[in-house]
Length: 88
Image (tube, rainbow, N blue to C red; front, side, top):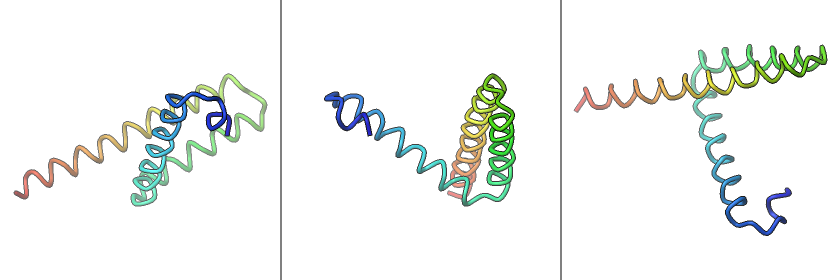
């Protein structure tokens, strides 16, 4: 990977941090059928846009996917935190 050889420890740490966050997100998605279903649908839209060589649409769908995934995971974590707090 480029970041391993660029000589920037800061860039290397940033990329590693992003990689870890993606792993956490993937675990969350894998554990929730509704998150998985939405994610698969969005990935299909991205692939369709790429197959149709529509980079603008692919880019917009990707941004939407990232935002919606972030929001779904955040909402799920908030719910779980509230449920744990109510159970104490």
